[in-house]
Length: 502
Ligand code: GLU
Image (cartoon, rainbow, N blue to C red; front, side):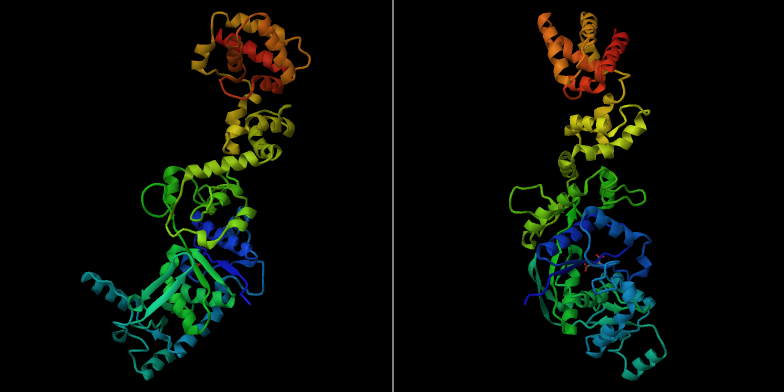
C-alpha cells in the first residue's frame, strides 16, 4: 500500500508571509489535491525571540484569501495536533534524549562566551569555526568530559544544549524530487544544536519529529532549506524512521539583477510582495489583484505545464501540476506579467460583480443622484472594462458617465475646433432635441441620416462631439455614451462646450 499523501506548509510566524512563501504553500496545496491528500498548516514558533504578534493570523488569512485553505491545522484538528510547535513543547525533549542515549547526539556545555571566543579566533586567522569532528573533543561536552563530570554538571543544573553527532568520513546520498541525487561529505557538516538551553527544540529537531508524527509523506519547501536536508536525512536515520520525500523549490528572483526577490524590490519598483497589507506595505489584495490572478502567476513561477498555456484556474492547476515540471533554476519575477494576469481575470469577472466593487468609488466621487445605482454602474462597467487592469482604473476610464467634463483636452480642442464647428454643433442640438427614443441605435441612425442629407463629413461631427461629451478623445462608442447619460445631459454638455470653447 502506498502512503497517503500528506504535505505541510510550515512557516515561522516571524512576520508577514512573503509572496515566495505563498508559492510554497500553493505547490504543497496543488500536490496534495492532485493526489487526493491532505494539506497541513503547521506553525513553527520554537524561536520565541523572533515571534511576531499577528503573523500567524496573517498567514491563515492569506491562504484563505488565495483560495488555498489548509485541511488540517490550527482550528481544524485532523487528529495530529496541536499544530503550533510551542504547544508541542513537552514532547520534543524525549526525542532529543533518545538520540543521546543511542549515541547520535551529545550534551554540550560550552557557554556562548566561549563559543564567541572560538569564532573570533578563527576569524582572525581567516577561518570559520565549525563545531564538528575536528574539534569537538577539545570543547566542553559529554564526549570530551568524563562521565562523572557530565553527570555532575547535569545534576548541578548547568546550562547545556544537545548537539547532533555528525559521523566523520561518510558520504550521504540524498535524493531530491526536483534536484535529483545529491552527494554530501559529512566532514563539512557541523554538529547542529537540536535542543536549546531554554528547553525548546531547534527548528531541525522539531521539524523532523513533527513531520514524522504528522505522517508527512512529502516535504515541499524553498531552496533555502536544501542545506538542512543532510541533517534531516541523518536524523530520520538516527531515529530509525522512514524519511519523507523531499522537493526543494527554486528561488523567486528579482525582476532585474541578481539575487532573490525582496521586500525592497517591491518598494523600489512599486509592486506588492505580500498577499495582504502588512503595516505600510500594501498587499496584492489591497492593490486590486484578484486571488485567481495571484495564484495563476505564482504557479508559473518555477513550474511549467510543458505547453504554451499560461492561464489556469485552480482546478486546472490541480489537474496539471506535477513536481517533475518544477525547474531547478530560479524563477524571475515579472511585475508586468502579474498585471497581465489581473487584466485577464478582471475581464472574466461578471460585470455586476465588478460594479459592486466599483460602487464605493463612484459614491466618493458623485453626490447622490440617479446614476448612483448598481444597474447604471454595471452598464458603465460593461462599456469600459476592456481597457482596465484593476477596478481602481475604472474611475479614470469612466468619470464622464457620472460627471460632465469641466476641462477639455487642449490639444484635441485645438485640432477639433474649426470655423464651422459651432454652427454644426448648434444644428446637431436641434436634431437631437426632438428625438424621443434616445437609444444608441436610434440616435445613431438619425444623426447619421442628418450628416448624409446635409453632406457633412463624419470627421466634422463625431470627433468634436466626443470631445464635448467626454472632455477627451477617449471612450467607447459615442452613441452608447449619449444613451447612457441621456438626451438632456448630452445637449447640455454640447452647449457648455460651445460656450467654453467658442
Ligand atoms: N519553519 C521553516 C520556515 O520558516 C520551515 C521549513 C520547512 O518547510 O522545513 O520556512
